[in-house]
Image (tube, rainbow, N blue to C red; front, side, top):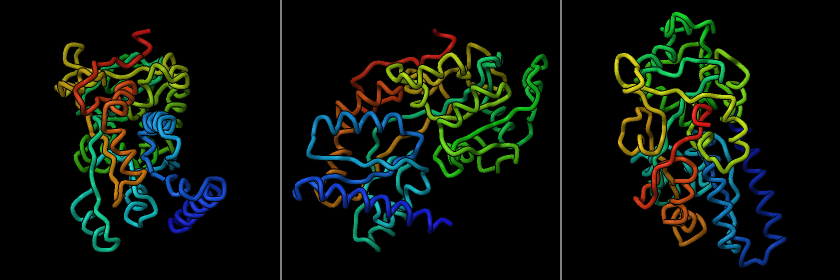
Length: 314
């Protein structure tokens, strides 16, 4: 099944590149390259590509959005030479690529992301601790009234995006500390499905990358702003307003928000090709401004903090 999926991806890539080569002059055709991006970062990378291509029309990017596991597989097989993920490539993975493909993998840290916990707008419970999140994901807490005795919402339904995404890996490693998810945890196919599910299910608790909910310039994201609430999260034993934080850029910078991770571009471009050119663009001033506008924290200290728009701040 997995092999068939990769064959299909290769077919799509080959078809696109064949068409591009027949439509563009030969010297430009090789500048259109595929990249693979974890769906967690789709909104911000989509914006990066739009600006990048507007600035340099001779270079084109074909983005493929999927999950983090497939991203590293595609990179190791040399099907793409640039991926966008939430962890750096490991020494073992780098050595494997070097030994088998004779390519050097490079990690480029381009931003700091956060995992947001979202609930339906009708859910008045907006404070939670990291310990309670762990108990929800592992099945120790299953009902909303275990968090708030007055809650009428019944069973908690935790929902994630693709089970091979960086968000799921982060939740297992950093929140659950290696413990397995409860069978009650529901895996969907994308972050958009998580948003749609939470807007419909009053008892849902969704986990999502902040770029999906924090860009006020994105009309699609604004359409969800009055249908969900972003929870305040605390490291303390009991969540209180004074010790709980939302994933604002300021609290990512200070480290007060508990669920922080990194955003990497990993590429194996051995020349000064489009992959290297695009990675440099994202890591520099204009690309960093796009990351800032998407609600993530840029690596370059040249921007101001930005609040996420939620229904409470409308």
